Image (tube, rainbow, N blue to C red):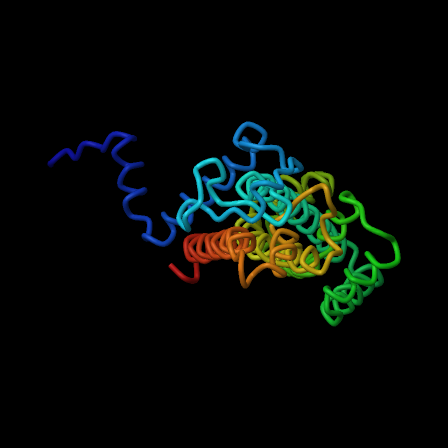
Length: 290
């Protein structure tokens, strides 16, 4: 009988990396670049985002005849576009990350409550889900920001209420399915507490579906933040985000398009990369698609 030698671990990892689709590989590279930029923003910015240089006002980027002093040009106040872009990436990813975590945590917890208590609690949660799904979230966000004012913690919390109903539906449905499969009931009969059952047994079994849903929510929050900031209701000066950079640059699109093209391209590439990664994860983690 022939003995087949196991391939070394580095060779296996290399084969898995090479087996990734080209689009997913490019998406991972871009997202890694965004994460590095966000984490090292304080060290990467060549200028302060509030530093004014009126002599270099509306200077074009290098590819359009500008100088290397301002690689992506300057805006209407002489502020360096590259510096503002780097800090905006960090702000937008920060809002999208915490907004996604809040939405996933809130929705999953409510889904578990509905599946555990059933009856009145389940009906209340389902009514809240239907109400959230029936109301355009942009209208809710505009109303909240108009009446309560705007601050960064409030804005992040508001983004966290986006798409929570998606996680609640998933968590409730998969928890009911787990109860029907019997393993949750068996653990309960052994004396395990509800927190242990849901936290250590049910949650790991539905985590793959929740992760795929998070890859859908993350780009949605980026686009929502960009839209609200574009309208002037999102991140407020002196802070910068991708959305308010696009908003400030719209008035100069005819003679200084680089002010809004850089953040707009970043928004498109980031949301596209996360969507590609989410589609790939869905195909890899969903057993019905294998």
